[in-house]
Length: 237
Image 1 (tube, rainbow, N blue to C red):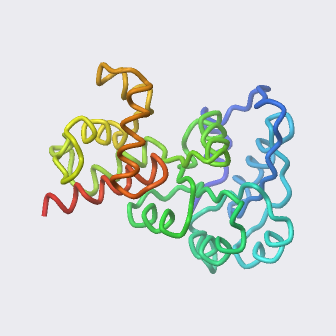
Image 2: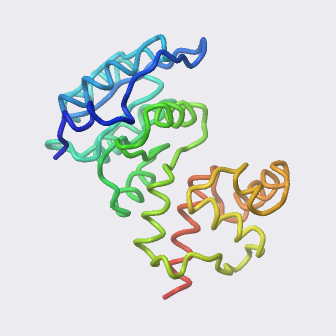
């Protein structure tokens, strides 16, 4: 269970007056923690580029209003009373094809992450991440760039394979440099950081990613990382 006061008092949740530009994203939230609902209501404001069209305590309460409002973004907790956030996403995803669903939760278990993306989530973020990074990540998800927080990437790697096996592995059809790039991304690096680490240009990384997407049959960096992690696990069995 989440503890409302811990989130509001957390130093990462100090609220500034920065804005996100002229584009306003219509967003709804499904969150059972009253303290975190209060925090989200203070964050998701027009000054930051958001129009909060709905706040719901559970999935069952949210279903009909979300279908009517058709928001661009829905933030979902995983652990909800009754239906889980992933259940809610599974029920709504096929009807809200233009909506970006992002899991915003305190649960980092790998099975929840994989289940969320399999159900159609475009992001999986922890509530403990810095506010500005969280808002940046949900904006990216709406723009079509799925977000997997670095903490989640590291937890998945550690859980699936152990920290002693975190180097690149050879996977059939993936070149050594492509494997190196996927490994760096799976450790939470963004494309520019990976480019610097590999000693190549950002444009070269983008070219690598296009090739990797085609080879893995995915459409995004997050899907590629998740599939790479699964393939790493299979290669170690």
